[in-house]
Amino acid sequence: MARPPHARHMGVIVQSGRCHDVRAPGEPRRLSHVGRAARRREDPPLLRGEGRFLDDLPIDGVAHVAFVRSAHAHARLVALDVAVARKAAGVIAVVTAAEVDAFPAIGMARAIEGMVVPEMAFVAGDVVRCQGTPVAIVVAESAELAHDAAALVRAEWTALPGAAEPDAALAVYVEPSGLGWESGLVRMETDGRVTVATGSSAHGQGHETVFAQIVADRLGIEPEAIDVRHGDTAAIATGIGTFGSRSTALGGGALVHAADAVVVKARRLAAHLLEAHAADVRLGAGGFAVAGVPDRFVRWADVARLAWAGPLPPGEEPGLEASHVLAPEHEVWSGGAVVAAVRIERETGALTLERLVWIDDAGTIVNPLLADGQLDGSLAQAWGQIALEAVRFDADGHLLSGTLMDYALPRADDVPHAEVHHMHSPTPRNRLGAKGLGEAGNIGVPPAVVNAAVDALAPLGVRHLDMPLTPESIWKAIRR
Image (cartoon, rainbow, N blue to C red; front, top):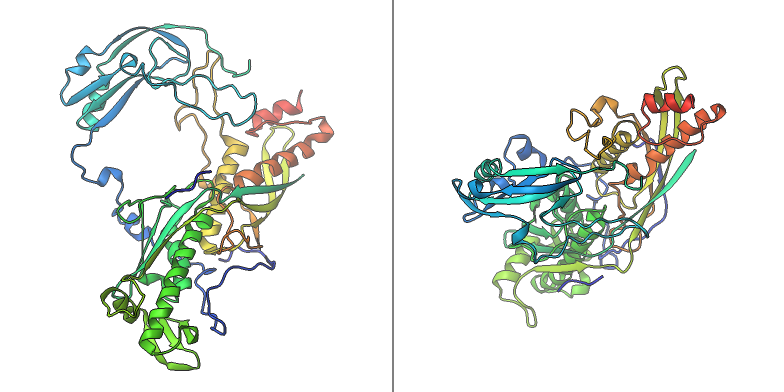
């Protein structure tokens, strides 16, 4: 891969693991923020309705797009009339297949050998092979005007035959994560506050809280003194984002490197202020002191003012910031095990989860409260997959479960309780020792529950069950 320019813990098993430490020899270990259950700092403004999203940003000159899509799973486009839509108020353009013929089809990765990947055009011109395929794109001055104009497009179809099928005990799991690269920047401001910028933009995981805890530990300050910025190319030019359980290992790991580099320079500047050798200067709570002479102490703000305003010692450049791109050669691997006990009513097929015991090892846990929240979320997703969610088509390939009236998502009272135990075996592949966490439930829980259900029905001759395990599907399996 190219590199770029809480009280839910039923038990804890601690295994040995070593993480990189930038303390000078003899420097005392400071009280750690990593490992503390801290509430998310992002939540109060969101709960007050003060969150800022893309639609909240006043950007001049931005056009909006609405798509005209096929209601058919397989049909021939006989006629397409966009003339009225093109004359509608605020419309900038209406794009059809004729205008995008020069573009190649959308590339799709083949995840497994032999996987069938149909050609995906940006805009279909003659035949559609999937419900929802775009046949026209309306560009207008506002989203409302774009949607109004899209409703004026007239399409005539000849329906074609469809196809609904593309090709007419103990679950031990592993979760790969932390592959690729991510960027981070740490800057000590002149007032002693810290600005952290990350290329890993959040979508609800608690990045601001966790990243502040990580950097606070490395600098010996409180998380409240740290401002975290993400999704802002003015603050940091490159970044990948958040997916694949990579944010703490890669995004947090990059910030560890950047913070450690700031400490290295700050120790030299503190030594200059203290008139001491850098090797004798120790990082403590809120600043630096001379080893054995704790009264000789300078605050971070004192060091930062020297770094930014001078006069600097010979050989030092202005500023007190560092950036880092973390691009490890190998991914990290989380692991765990899930054991499920189920009860099934023979008369109705109803499945009841009696007990779910879950051991997860995600290495260093920065914030146990948020980690358990991530596991709860993946358990909810897993239970939806196990017992409720299904994409249904009719015989001609039309989607029948396309709304939340028809597609069964789990509600809070649907999600079962899990007895979660944590192991901690830090990985040596990043300085935090952190591994992935967010997808553990999706990986480990479904096979455990399905295997338990099959085991329960084995005396009745059942050897296989497909998810979702609805009462109807289990009832039918019992009576085959």
